Image 1 (cartoon, rainbow, N blue to C red):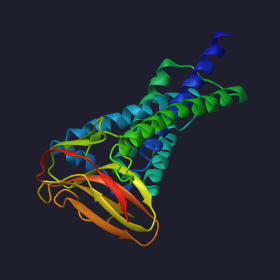
Image 2: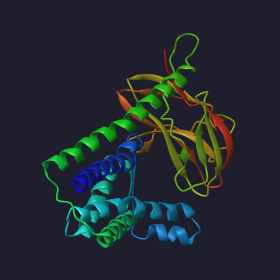
Image 3: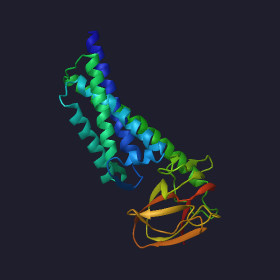
Image 4: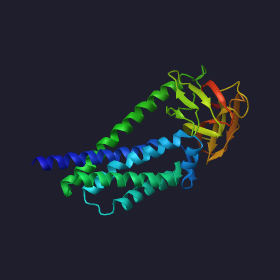
Length: 294
């Protein structure tokens, strides 16, 4: 009886783990709107240049798949290396297909290595679980329940950002249409950190030796005339706020220019970014806002 209880606990944890991996690698990235492709060993080239971020990412990718290797070995999967590689490949393809990030060949290597390490650990400990219908249901139920937690958190965060956006509605009733995503982080592969403040503004601080970005929001606008502003007094090609559509720049950066007006002939989905440039050394506050004029 005790063994059966352990098996069901294992299945619950396995379901929770799958939900966590799917959230971390896919659903938490919805709305970032960019895609890219990095060749094998790109991370090692960057590490040799002194970039510690890639080293941490590589270690994280190994650790992320160790539990998968443990689980696959425990339920009797014969070729854990192949299964781990295919699971990683599926994630990378989905990220690239739906513009959720960069297809990194090195991720395939490190995820697969993590699965192999996990399988080795499980093999040393010993023990195998034979899944029955009840256990499969437990895995599925655990996945569903654990997936609901981060989705609920994201909705709470979104409502918080909606309230912050409303702070900047005009006195004449014109609404600020830009609801930020509330995600803090470093502009990719730089030391520039973007932090959301409690008044709905952004603190952008750090330095960069390349052009990079951090997604801060997305919105779909109907045809009409709009104004985009929220940052001023910075030099050109240092830091700015940028609009993109279909992975192409849609307007000049706000920052060197105080305000940008644009006209849409059709309903358009826009991505909003903080963009930093080579040589940027910034410490600025931005309040990105978009109004429909007229």
